[in-house]
Length: 120
Image (cartoon, rainbow, N blue to C red; front, side):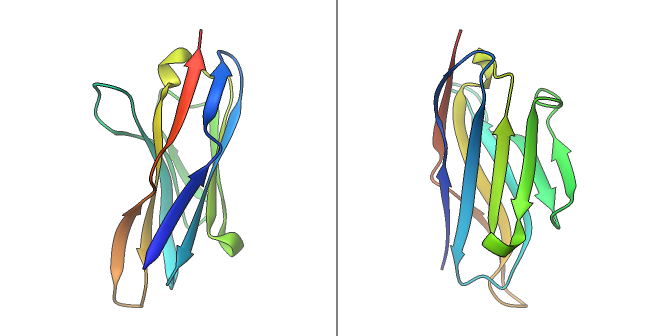
């Protein structure tokens, strides 16, 4: 069994910063990809950023230059440093990971979500 636990959400004023963290635990053989998605009320869940292999990153156009994703492979943890936050960044942020529990078994896992609210 694999668990993803997020932390770091909260309320911040526009222009402020927050750092999200997501730690994976359980029966982990290898983590391929970790990322963050978000879902605002009435909207579809969208990719914010992801990192593969610890170094290859990908960002949504809306967050480029403001958000930074990083990964600590030793801790099975992914971070999302969010700066210059805007009200439109308000959403529930979900951690996602592509994890092998054995050499042959691979699954897609989600955290429970953490609320980020940016006030004008």
